[in-house]
Amino acid sequence: MKKSFLFLALLFPLLSLGQQSPLYSQYMLNDFVINPAIAGSKPFFPLRVNAREQWEDIGDIAPSTQSLSFHAPLGDGRVGLGGVIYQDKTGPTSQMGGMLSYAYHLNMGKLSRLSLGVSAMLYQYKLDQSGLTTQNPDLAIDGTVYSEMIPDASFGAYLYGKTYYLGVSAYQLFETTFKEASLNTFGENKGVRHYFAMAGYLAEINKSLHIEPSVLFKTIESGPLQFDINTRVIFNKKFWTGISLRTDRSLIALVGMNAGNFHLAYGFDYSLTSIASQTSGSHEISIGINIPDPRNRRHVYYWRY
Image (cartoon, rainbow, N blue to C red; front, top):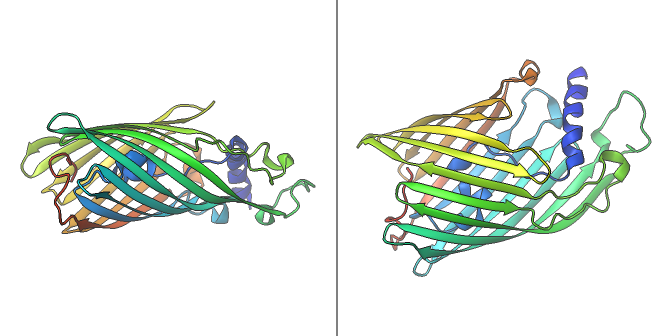
């Protein structure tokens, strides 16, 4: 019980900031989920299933995220379409919905392309007070379940070549207020606009060894800037391991493999803060299939293993 109260105390400030987008540690393996402009940019059709359990050992209030995504190029490859279905739960709040993405790719010389993309989103936002227990009775927390369907949108740009990529995106553009939720519970519950900027480079050491440094910057309006610094070491274009350092004082270990068209990856987050004494860490797994493109589009521009 003491542990639950501790983490509820940590979650309440986040809830008062408004609706937050799901957190991913392996975004570099499925970057489409944070940038719609990536739709149709690969030389195959990536189907991905991701599952993340954050702050293990603290029970039902721990953040939990699952997603299913797919995208592919159309026609001559200038247009990309994709979609994501996801569920995200943090304490008494949850989101379940999806998005459809459209991207248009422009040639920028012989070895680079610029893509612009948009997504239409629709999700159910729910605030369930029935699972909350407080040390002192609070009339504002009466067990009511609030639920509302919310439309939203996102935008992104993505410049990519065989050895690099740069991308920017913005999510929850409408900043919709969750009207049904009581303001006395967590304050104004409003969608908060999220901004992402990412970059990466693939360095070939030799034919069997590649190193991929990358960085992700993310922030919300009126919120602090957070960034991840990542490095992956890729062996024989099949196996890889990596590490990430996040400015919220988290250390993330990554490992994965590609066996033919099959993709498998695992990430473990370890907090460097006092939270570490209350939980054994966070786990994230990604399973996928790279469906071959029979028209062999994008191989000139695609760089990642």
